[in-house]
Length: 339
Image (cartoon, rainbow, N blue to C red):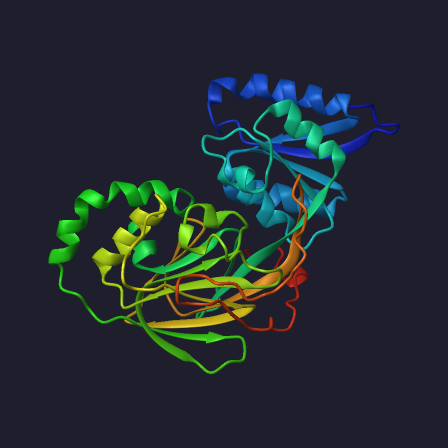
């Protein structure tokens, strides 16, 4: 790639513990060299704690950096994202973690030189962010999904849900022996009347690409400004486990049908109270309100923002996605520092 005519200062936030720590110093040297070739002057901060990574990203955005680069694994990238929500800065990603799920879903090359070259193109993809507020006033954000109920309790790391699901097949007999309890979910989608659904699991998806792990929704990626809601009525706990295990292999043949909805604002309460988790972080057991922050983050990637066509798509053999108009826009700036 040709040298830029003018040097641009960028902020690089790296986690020296990401991936193989023994490769960290050499990777950083390579990356700074690649970035220099593309015309960037790199200001580097190395940090291991997610809270401090987020604070560093927030400060970099306020200091006027137009490009902030996250170098590390999924945890590092998410922490940088948290600090950049609502800012005008663009996020560059250099994946050096083990799994690099976020980078893969955003089409970021795992080759260091190619990832640096991509950042130099400045091709921007605007990403929606999910915002969660609990009934006691706590606020947080998520980029992939929120899980409520059985999935949150069983799979503490939602980034690895497909792998974890496969490992629980051997435990199904124990689950079958447990006495089933009735679990009711009360859900309000935008301004629609509250729905009452008996289900052990509710999943709210945001990040493009999560459907790669759940085949049943492969045709139902959320449209811009909407979150995708999955509920599992008439599924016993063993059936839910079998569903996820089979879907990771694209082979579910059960009788129950997953229901899907799309909305910009979702209110959820459950009886009894169920575990709530966002992007692998537990929020406890509480009623929650989930909103979409549309185009709240700008990521440099090969992806292009989709053009919405027909918002209704077939989701299962008998179910279709129900579209609800997004609720009024949220003050993004007021959320900075509250995640």
